[in-house]
Image (cartoon, rainbow, N blue to C red; front, side, top):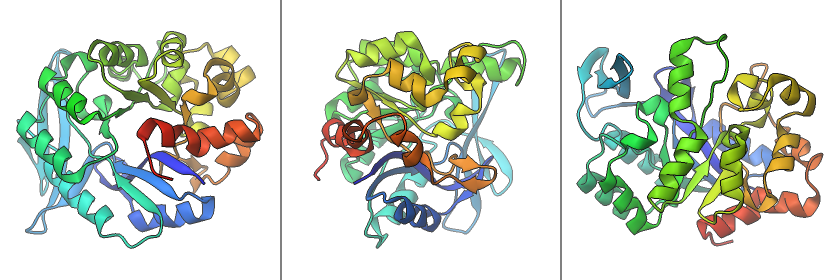
Amino acid sequence: MIIDCHSHFGNDYYCGNVELDDYIKYCKVLGISHAFLMPTPWPKYFDDDGKEVTSLIWEHMNYKTKIYYSIFNGKKEQIYKNPYKQVNLKYFDLIKNNNSKIRLEYIPLVHGVLDTPDYLYELLDNIKPKAIKMHGFASGFSPEEIKPEICEILRYFDLPIILHTSVYNYNYGYGYDTKYWRNECHPNRWVKFLKENNLKGVLNHGACLNDDSILEVNRNDNLMIGIGPDLDISRDFFKVDIDKKTYNNIGYLKLLKEKVLTCKLLFDVDFNWNIDNGQLDYLQIERFSKIWNESELDSILYGNAIKYYKLNK
């Protein structure tokens, strides 16, 4: 049994198209029987008139004031609330009406600043997801900006937040903008937010191997860590909070093994960021089996997810 706790499908403004059928084919090859699927970071859809809509992009003024836009048939228009409403409804229907034997769970994309409480409550009450997804970097908000009403609703439904985490410790590479906005979603900031608001959360991307965050995860029942996409992370030292030499000498998975309790790790593919030289990566399980023993691997691949998300086998 394998449970993929975090993957994407749909059209994306920056990252192209991720076909649901392609993901299902991938699951069959890898042996995934249960999957959590959510929109891509900058999702697009077609409205009822057949016009292409990008749900949300954003700009900033002096790193403080943020302006949010949707793009309707190539035209940018400012947006003030519920940017992912139509994406969530349309993508949920695609999952619900899919006939695959793989058990697919739709995980809605939530905006911590623009979503209205009434909309969010109705959405969660309707689709009854196992979790929600927040991508602060793509959506243009930091943990500190999330509205208290959003937190209250998530506590009411007792839903974990699947979180994009990112760091940037270098003065070279991608530039100052990337460094600034990546650190807005630092795992430490998410941990602080989750603890202060008594919320459950999964720190994706290995919590960027940040020691303080991992220490808190290891002792907090509300918190977990998602591993994927391990190959991509292993090849990019910019994505972790550890010095380059140590990282290159030891490697991503071995460091996870050293730092994180096995019972706190969740398997996730992060489709389709699981790429190796332009091709889909099918060797995750093989790599994992060289790091964790069989019992530990069973916990990572499905046991921990069953307990944390209260899933039926």
